[in-house]
Amino acid sequence: MKPIFTLLSVLCLGLIHSCTIENKAVSQTESINSLKDTGIVYLDYKRKASDLVISRAAYKDQLYGFWLGECIANWTGLVTEMDKIGNIGEIKTGNFYTRKDWGQPDHPSIWGEGIPSSLSPTIDFVLMGQDSIWGADDDTDIEYMYQHLLYTNKATVLSPEQIRDGWIKHMKAEEENFLWVSNQTALDLMNKGMLPPATSQPENNENYMMIDAQLTTEIFGFFAPSRPDIALKMAHLPIRTTAWEDAAWISEYYVVMYSLASSVDPDLTMKEKIHWMAEQARKRLPGDSYSSKMFDFVKSQYEAGVSWETARDSVYERYQVAQKDGYDITSKNLYCNGCFAAGINFASSIVSLLYGEGDILETIKIGALSGWDADNPTATWGGLLGFMIGKKGVEQAFDQTFSNRFNIHRTRQNFPNDGIDTFENMAEKGIFVVDRVVQEQMKGGVDLKNNVWYIPQP
Image (cartoon, rainbow, N blue to C red):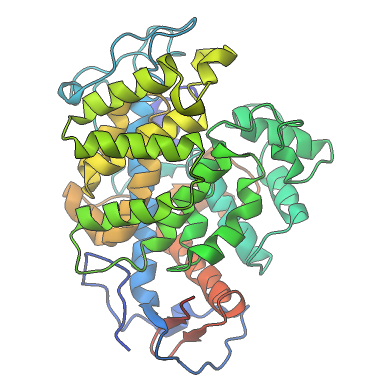
């Protein structure tokens, strides 16, 4: 969904439930003072036997892992974003990538004017060392903004006005503002006085079926650990700022996945965890929707034992060539045959999720090679898996220590400290958002002495 940027632009810019974290080294003696928000009145709470108990210290490490994993996957996916979209319509890109293309020269994207990505000459991971700064992109910046809006408004459910005011304050109306399709349309409508959810309704927003909400709202799942019902309530209006029908349901699928990461059985393997979460989230998709049928089709390909490349090619043939299961984007004659659409990118994301089997490196590789808007599915799953294995788990997976700094002003505006933040601070702010959600939405408790949440289960 974005032009290719130079590497220089990137650089400038109870039992305590450990929430499925694979790294067990998180200190439970972390200073409690650093995890107390002076803007919250912490209420006394009597723990119930059925409450889920989650360590806030472990969760902070996991949120760090989320931001780090998402940034790695986002920037890696940008290398191959829109390189391969098929051969329908006015833009033809040749055969899709396969596993053999990893480490090989990158091909130009549909807007690359014959020039491969400047991020990396080869298809490989894009990694920022300790002396660098991760640049914001549209896979991370609106999630960052929503966390900021929840925190500064002392809210758990954002109002239409709070969403509109946040968008207008933090997004440029002109110049290069790193917004595309439905996000850009929604901002234009807000600047004319329209509020969500009207900004996503088909009669107002012709791009309502595009991918935008999938990459901007998953984080709401982390704000309601183990409680998809609360996460969906919080995400309902942010999703419907830009998405409608299948595009909204797909976004809810991701929110559910993120919320379930806190309650999946810790004794399962990573593969088993991911597949259980995927099946549970599938229940959110209406049975007659093309999104549910896409999930079922990809799952059937996986269970049949075919390669991920064969599954991906079958997705292309079934949904863009044959237009099965009610997915009729091709008939609309859109630019690049709807390569930014919610549906085809959701199907592609399920390929990388199932075939990646919980391995963060393999999942990112498959996502980057799968085609279409490649940075978006990779960022979603890189963030989820980064959360599940935590900061040190991500570092161990890549055998590297990374930069902890993040430049939100690469793409957005009007944030503190000239837009330079750290993953530690971002994770801590996320903890405080969850504190408020646990008390106000879940009617649970925050135990500052033991540094845990008590989360009632429905």
